[in-house]
Length: 228
Image (cartoon, rainbow, N blue to C red; front, side, top):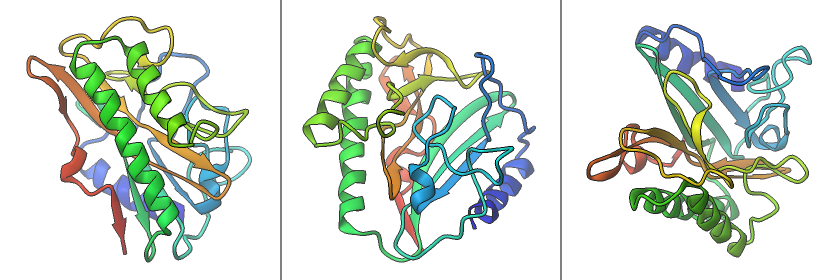
């Protein structure tokens, strides 16, 4: 089940020193540190300002990882936060039991192309709003306009968020953030598409250094999709 996968990841993170808390700036925002959604669960929205909702384990916690059993061939999105001495890192990878259908593989490749555009714009020191405009335009050109970062009417309008001691720091890759990511700034870049039958995408945490954007998490060194 989704929860069994999440529990396995939690054990590793706890053993590495994760304290269990995710700090958020805005009230009443809350989130689970590991979101595992399989198949249609990945197409369910939530109150949280993010692309991925999920069923949660019960109505009292109606978002995130639930008791859904993973079925062969469906996309399994794993979005995990870890805190090292208080500082957050955010990462998403795709998994599947058996092979993924070609349409899902194509959607993943499209989101990786959007990611490259966003990273390139930020690397050049351009504004976060321009990174949003160019990334969004490419997704629309690829046919994902109604599914980028959620389904209508529940789409969220960003492609990346700053993070550090808190998950929802500024600036954000979104309209209105007309300033660059400053040197030393850290940002999770996470283009995803959401459909009724599931969701797919990528996420890594980046820092803007003297040599440009550098990944703090694995980026391409850790495969975008794992099959078992």
